[in-house]
Image 1 (tube, protein in one colour):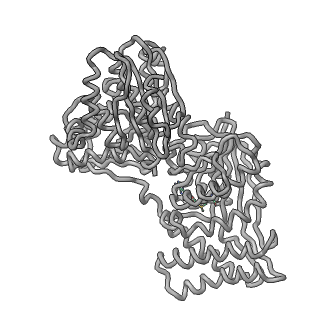
Image 2: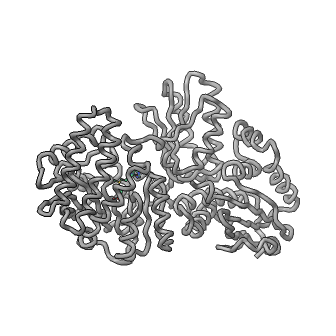
Image 3: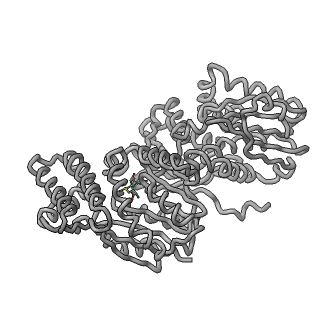
Length: 172
Length: 392
Ligand SMILES: C[S@@+](CC[C@H](N)C(=O)[O-])C[C@H]1O[C@@H](n2cnc3c(N)ncnc32)[C@H](O)[C@@H]1O
């Protein structure tokens, strides 16, 4: 799995589920985002306090990430997605190939989720943008799902997004 | 892959009478063009209404950012051009992210406000959802189970089924059913966070991890269609003010060929000897008290009608009497004491009843307890168990 070196240092995250597929196959149908996020959400939520609602929240967040990779990914290579758990938090590691030069773009988008003015930026995007940018999507995750978003290690031209979702605490 | 063959997973409706635009289901378009029809329906609605437009997203199960931005765009632009209307987005506490996401619109335009419909949505909710009902539920199921464990197989419950207990209360029925009938899956749903917390506690105390306790509104569930072989809903159609709405949902989540099983009371038929008249008077008053809060605790004998109207076939109805002779009479007395506490001690007080009334009301419960514990006494509580099959 890509990004394996990344979580070795945080051994307390236990692996729950992962998938890998050809990026070209993934990109062949937009509905893959919905189908994969719904399926994975249901699988990993069954032993959460409120499985139905946990699954609904998780699917929302994962779908946005998959949509980011769908819109920004390039067809050569493989897409991989792994879900880990530690206590109340699920970690999603999503690795996908994208055109060269995108790394910096994602780096900046991720950094903005940690900015002091993330909230203002997010409101501004709702108020003005016709369609959500990838940056707005990551802001949505951090603001509406209390997610912590980072870039993980990956070999170019792949990108790994590491997103920690403390949903067990959010779904009360 | 042919995506046009897939059924559209969402629905939009505009009702000009209630000035309500309702959006439900899963809305995850690739671009806003794919939802152009519902966007223009929303624009049309905005043109038509006066004063307030309600935007009902109670059953919006999923909405991606693309769809959200497209909707936000229409609402926010309308705020700028139409200072004469307000938008009330009606969300549910069950789908928590909708509340969060739509609340941002209010920060941008105060003309848009967000209401959580299920924070106060049926008249009896405050009594039923706080902890006062817990002792009632605990004592009741202990007694009803003796009967129902034999009744349930007659209504089609078999081991290995996928089952759901909707309006599960403190979850004791789910625990008992799980043990006795070993379902392949069991979901237990209620809208009382206090009862669910209690239920989860009991389950984890027994090391039970496979009951899926879930918070939800039984009249607007997130559960998907056609999921369960056997759906139970006990003593709850009589508590919610729109029992037909609950049945519609029970029908929806039940598999074709599966069955929905309901139990309900006719409280005015509770009885006891000796002191039958005082007992009778009090239970007639119980029925009236509940109807004051729009709850129909006389629903039991109407079960068949409700099941037929909801579209079920092969309907079975039976009744049974929980009595002081079923086991330890003290168990029966404990139920009545729990009723007295909540019905006389809380509900009658809330209705504003005078102390003389409350005293007489209490007396009937005490007489029922007296009858239950009397060596020659008899005390009964009748219940109707009914089920119907969802046609194939
Ligand atoms: C009288 S109790 C019965 C509980 C349980 N079935 C039993 O027999 O012990 C009624 C239950 O219905 C629940 N309830 C009523 N209306 C509801 C709704 N719309 N959605 C979910 N739960 C509801 C209440 O929270 C309460 O726990």
